[in-house]
Amino acid sequence: MTKEYPMTYEEYEKRVIELFLERFDEKDREKALERVNELLEADPDFISELYGDSCFRYDRPDIYGENCKRAFEDYQIDSIAVNTLDMFLGGELD
Image (cartoon, rainbow, N blue to C red; front, side, top):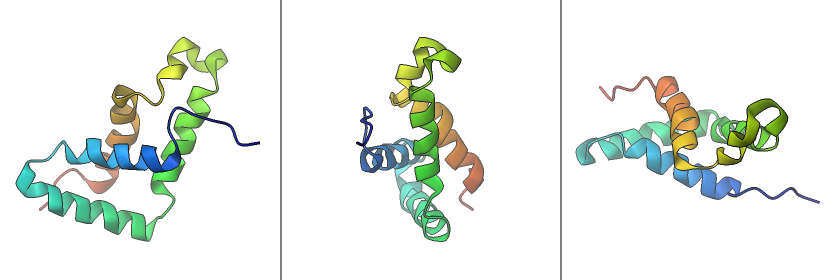
């Protein structure tokens, strides 16, 4: 039996990318998306590993308290997954 989470992997990946692209001006979003796609081509498991981390946190109220159930809210996705993506890609597009 597969455990159910508030988001499927596909929904999570889409939301991580959307939140990441919101950090850029409209003129820079295409370049930012290109960099994300290059990363996912080189490391196809990058976002799935972030999803796994969110699932782990969601399942662990004994470690993370009741906030663990917020692991799939935009604030948590932006704070952890999107920041990780941003740091990995270096932030700047030049």
